[in-house]
Length: 289
Ligand SMILES: NC(=O)c1ccc[n+]([C@@H]2O[C@H](COP(=O)([O-])OP(=O)(O)OC[C@H]3O[C@@H](n4cnc5c(N)ncnc54)[C@H](OP(=O)(O)O)[C@@H]3O)[C@@H](O)[C@H]2O)c1
Image (cartoon, rainbow, N blue to C red):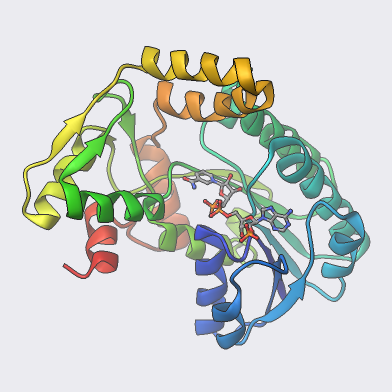
């Protein structure tokens, strides 16, 4: 039995789908008000709980062999504390393997990015927990771009904040789901930290060009500088200091490059025996064009 947290999220949903396609048993931890009907229809057990409540975490791991932590949210309570609780209770419950979805660049010490800091602390805690683990550090998910592509389909407009030439290697969220599931049974993935990107390194300005090719439409790129984001963030800070703090993670994402080296990509492809998907292929599959 797998336990998947964040089972209603972009990644978690795909992990549950794939587990059920393979007829593997899975318990999805979901919040009461979340949209989890699809998971039930696919045959997942549903555990209603909230990760900010330790008692829910403790109950959810009972009888589970593998945990895939794929939830996201607020830095302290959800990215940090809920994962520490999950690790502790997984250990106490005799879980065989723990997969943690971290983030590419987590080890670069972005002081201003609370989610990055929380994830790095969780990585360290997991590494010394005594549990078998795999830490996956993905780049940005292709599924995040689906709503932007739909907006582009309607308007032809793409908003690109910051340097258009900065590089990224967007990962197919379906490839990442497969890698997360297979990490628990692959000897070579045990107790490893793996960076996971897509098939290619793209400049961010290539994303609207890909949209343009898919929809046969010339892109209009609106490209404010990072300074404009910083000014907005400072304004937010005057009204809501917490809001300003959480925008720090977004700033780290906008201001830096997140891509895997060819050697890291080759490693993933050979370990998991797969050919990583390009962004264009992922988008075409979902946008039915
Ligand atoms: N998206 C990216 O580009 C990217 C890149 C690198 C790493 N990551 C990491 O990958 C993981 C998955 O990302 P994602 O984009 O798939 O996430 P997502 O779509 O934002 O989903 C977040 C999930 O966490 C759940 N959640 C939040 N607070 C919760 C709580 N208190 N109790 C129970 N569940 C709670 C949400 O449930 P509800 O449906 O109830 O809200 C949802 O299922 C995250 O750890 C993220 O940091 C993401």
